[in-house]
Amino acid sequence: MDENVTKVIVKYETMVVEDDLFDQFISVCEKAREPNQALMEAAQFTEENGF
Image (cartoon, rainbow, N blue to C red; front, side):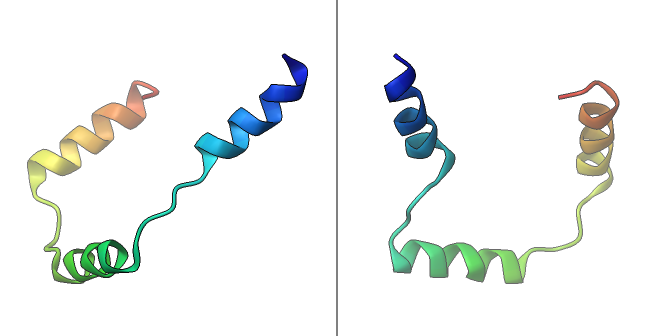
């Protein structure tokens, strides 16, 4: 079990995406607008409650 722990952690702590998916993600991020009030309140709620 101890031998597999490191392999499992490495497997799930990283993520590999295809170049075109990464480019699409960056494109969407660059076009994103400022967060609205509901999103800001949700973020504050999660932070205050330790999520």
